[in-house]
Every structure is written in structure tokens, then in C-alpha cells.
Length: 115
Length: 115
Image 1 (cartoon, rainbow over the protein chains, first blue to last red):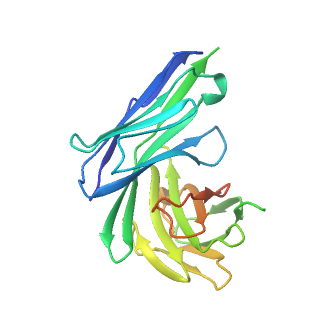
Image 2: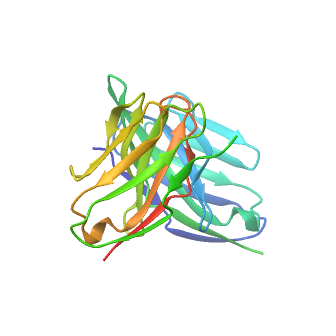
């Protein structure tokens, strides 16, 4: 089955700096990669996603890049703010035909933005 | 539009008992997915229901089961509870099939503690 590795597990940055979280996946059949943000005590929330036919996607201060050959994808947050502090999860979706799929998450990265 | 709701929010059970958790999706959403979240394993996909049928299942034992009703509300059942089943159980709903680019909206979760 699919295996998603996420690094680093914790990340501290100064306010205004950039943060990068990296994930690798094992199954070349995976073709959809969502990212979730979970603030302390709150539910996960989709913040950005990318499909395998796209190399990069941006939404204001966040961007995701995908390298299918190397099987890795990354989340980039620029001009970080204290409200960006949360746990971020990457995920990979692998379709197995007949409408079935597997959704595999990384273990999460706890991002702390220091004012 | 009301969000995803889950009941109960907290539950304490003892080993060997069974438990049923409930999830009410956003009105109009037909897909409900269930996830287990633990500090050690992170987020893990349990299963997805769409139009009252289980469409996908993660790597969990048969003690974990679920169903979906005609109004899209879903229940998850865990039989013969084990200590390792202590976790936050999250459900997420989406208009169409989850994990295929349709944004999933998470509920607040049910915190299950097995003693």
C-alpha cells in the first residue's frame, strides 16, 4: 500500500520567514495530494491541493509543488504569521479502479511561528 | 449552512464493550468518511460511505464497521473495544465522492477513551 513520509515533524520559524514542509510517497499510482491544517483543539481543514497533472499551485501565501518523478510534494508558506501556527498534514490519494481509492496521511508537522 | 456534527463529543468505555458514533453531514452532502486520529499514528482513513454504500475501506480490522442512512447520516461502530482504540474519531462530509478533489469538511470529532 501507499506510504507517505512527512518532514520535519516540528518546525519553528520567525514571523515573516518562510516555512517548507516536505512529503514523499511510494505509490506512483497516487494522483491527488491534499494538505490539511489543524489548529490546536480544532478540526482539520483543507488548505490547498494538487493533482498529478500539475506541477505547482498557489493560493495567496501558500503554494504546493509536486515532483512526480521523485514522488515528492511540498507545502510552502511565505510571510508566516502567528495564525499559521498549527499541525499540517499532507496526504496522497491512490485510485484503485471502480471508484475505489485509498487516502494516506503523513504523520503531521507542528509549525510554530514565533512573533 | 450548518457544519458537520458528531455525537457524542466524548465517550468513555471499557475493554470488550462496543460503541456507536454518529455523524450528521452538511445538508446536501452525500459522502461521509471516517478517520481515526491518535498521537502515535496520526490521521488514518477508516472508510467512506456514499449513497448508503461503503465505497472504500482503510486498513482496520473488521471490528470497525459503519453504515449510512438514506438522509446521509452515518454511524460508525466499534465492537470488542481495545485500549488501542482510544482516539479522536473524525468524520468528514463532501458533496460528491471524498478524496477525489471534492473538499471534505470535518466534524469536531468524538473523543473515545477505552479503560
